[in-house]
Structure formats: C-alpha cells, structure tokens
Image 1: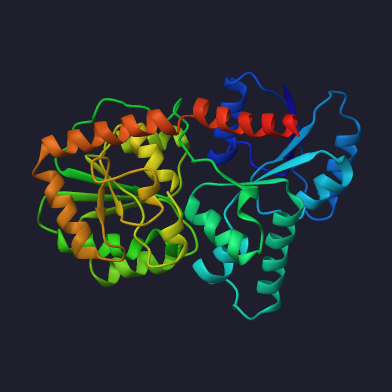
Image 2: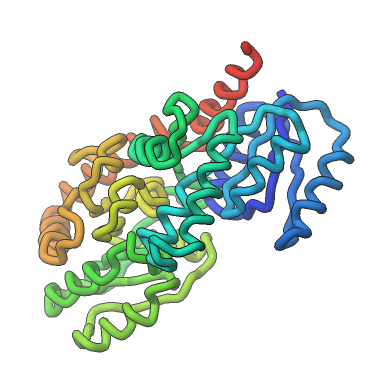
Length: 350
C-alpha cells in the first residue's frame, strides 16, 4: 500500500511524526510531497513536486498544519481520495480559545470559511476526540460520518519510562505552549498555595501568555517555581523523568473541554502520574484509575491533588501504571497507524 503525504506540515511535530511513524510500522509506503515555502509559493512548489511524482497511489493525506486551503488544493490537482488530519479547528482556536481576533472580524470570517471549505473538500476528516468531532460537524455543517477519531498518542521512542532522578524536594512538572487552554495561571496559583511544603514546580514552555504568566509569578512572589523556555524533545523527556507528578491542562475555555493534550500522552508514556482537568474529552479514553481528575480553573483543587499524590506513593504508582497501560493498549503509533490504514482500505472497497 502506498499513500502520498502532502502539504507544508512540520515533520517533527508530534502529531505528524506519530502518524507517519505509525503508518510505516504498518507497512504503508509513504511518498512525500512536502514544501517549506510560505505564501502563494507553496502551492506552486507543491504542484511541481506532485506532477513529478513517479509512484502510484490512490490516497493523499494532508498532514496537520494551519494551511487549510491545502485540502481543496490537493483535491483539485490530484483527483485522489483526500484524508485531512485537521487536528483542531483554526477558527475555534484563534477566535475563541486564544482570542487573537474578534469574533465579528473579517479575519474570524476567513478562518471559519477556511475550516468549512477544508471539511467540505476532504473525503475524511481526522480529529483527536469525539468532542472535537461533535463541534466541527455542527459548526461547519458537515455530516458526522465524514469524521474519524484518531488519538494523539506519544512518540514512545523518546517518551518512555526512565529511572526517577533523585532530588531534594517533591517535583511537579508542566510543559506546553503558554495559551489560555493550558490554564497556567491556575498552576501558578496552586504553586503559591503550596509554598513551604517542600514542593517545586517546574514550568517548561513559552508562547502567547508568557509575559502575562511571568508577571503573575512576580506579582504573587512565587518562590517555589522555576521557568524553562522551550527545549528539545530529548531534553524534555529528561525533565519529565525528574518529575514525581506531571500536570495536564486546566484552562477555562471551551476548546480545553474538547482535547486530550499531547502532554498527557507524553507523561503517561513515561509512566508518570498525571493531574489534569476533568473534561468530556479526557473521559473518552481515561478515568480516575488512570489520572487524577480535578475541576477546571481551580487552583485549590490542583494543590489538593498534588498533596494527595505526594503523601500517597502507592497511589502515585497505581495511577501511573494504569495510565501507562491504557495508553499502550490504545494510543501507541502502531495502533494509530493501523486505524488510519483501515480508513484507506475503506476507500478501496468503494
């Protein structure tokens, strides 16, 4: 079986890397039609590369990126079946979650149109949760049976169980982009509650809300929190290995209720106990045996969960093992690749 992986996707980004790796592990040959060019030039570059492909294939996968117009473009130039790894709605993320543009602005309308057009032009739209499928099917008026759920998973060649590093204080580690969905402000407020408890918070990442979060940490005079900028995946795995507990997301946004974030998969893949917000999406795969679930946007609940895990090593070990086993049974690259391979087989039956 041969497919074409198409677009301006970042090959190193976890979502793309995991799907590509999973397909290869399932014996799927991948022909890449990829561009690093920006603007209008990327369409011309992709067209030239596409017409010069020599291999035969029946299916194109448009890899995850923010370039929604690549989906209708792939269908226009190829006439092939198109699977679009949407991952999430650009309109929802930029307008309502990150609030980068006003909901009544021209830009918001363009984002909505781009998501709608891509949904209409793809033969199959891949998303990470049923909650995302419900949202995009309704918002972009697309029949639900066009969508497929493929978990995010983790790069288990990098994020794997490692020996716990010794350190003086109990360590709580968070990593991710600084955007509203993450709820970093609630993590910092929880850290403040736990000052004087011999607990250190390690915050890794950067992004839209970095200045706001650094300012908040100074305002509340945090003494038990260390910030690190974005680091390589290998270095991140080392930081996670030092954690007694890892944190997921806690943001008070609608999108936060629709996702299971990368970090949850990555930390579970390293067999770490995880505290995260209790949402409909997280419960599609995990339950209280696998994670410590707390109300969203609640610093006291986060603090209470950290204390609970610090004082109960048996609980830390049991949820870490349960979460790890759940991940291994449902969301490793081989399994996710097999699920996409099955979608491709469905095209062959048509």
